[in-house]
Length: 392
Image (cartoon, rainbow, N blue to C red; front, side):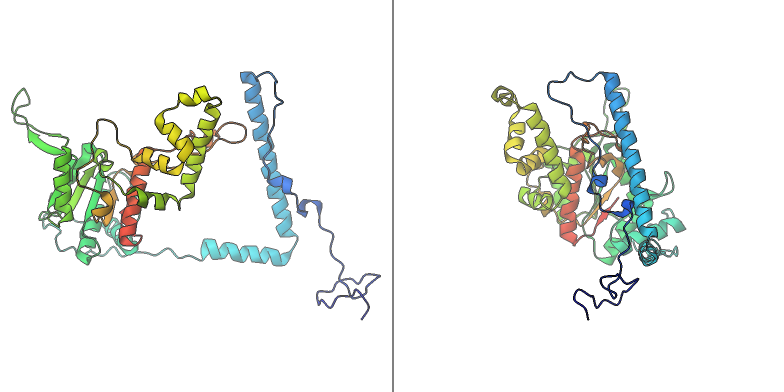
């Protein structure tokens, strides 16, 4: 064997210097490594240059958008050429696609009647799609009920709760609903599950005793002490289910150390904090400007995550926590959220390098405090149940 010759079995046309050495094919230009293709185009304006006019800014954004589109087209063309250059590579891609996109069989759930011992004799009968939906959520011990408006999400959710309690893996379910719907849910539960003991936390009914509406039934908010008493009923097993209004959700304290441990595992929290800190750093250029910051903003700038958590969990000045009640200690093992879209915008897009957020991504910002309040409490439920118990 000559010096420099290879023992590789993948031999093509021999070279003049080494007859047994495979000649490597020339890599087309589009297939060669080009790190720049992955870097979005950006423009840096020289310091001291006059500010751009409104028309110039619009033209600049159009120019960047066109360049991004051209870049995406070139990237797609490069990838297609890379795949087309090798038959084995094409086969590997097809196998990987089929394994991911076609290899999963979506399970089907039976629409046969679901046996629920405490379902009322005069209660509405569940339809096939409601039964199949309930069976799916029960099998997965959580999930999304996304039926269209008016086709039975409420009764499906009640069937899920009742069956889960019957199976023994749920003991303290909580239904989180808008304040305007708490008593509708209350009446629906008594209609379908007439022997259920129901507490409504956040609202109480009363009969008007004067005025033109005398004798009519209305509702008003609970006091902190009344809410605490109702939570105790659920915690001690004297209630089968609790209906919780949106406004009352944040009035239960949370263990800050447990929340800190949770947010330490969530990348979006780091991003949200970095976004706020960057905004504050851009806002504060001098000591005088720093003096104008609120105490909470200074804490966020200096202490980061813990200050961010304290800010999310803080109550408005005229609100009080429910005395003696902590969400982490209630033992809630199922949380059903009605109208879950009210808790959207947990994460929001971050400004791009050209200083703005693309319109298709919606408005930028720091995310919704209400959404984080729910997320923290849902995480506590998952800790309690080993990952189960959230139904939207």
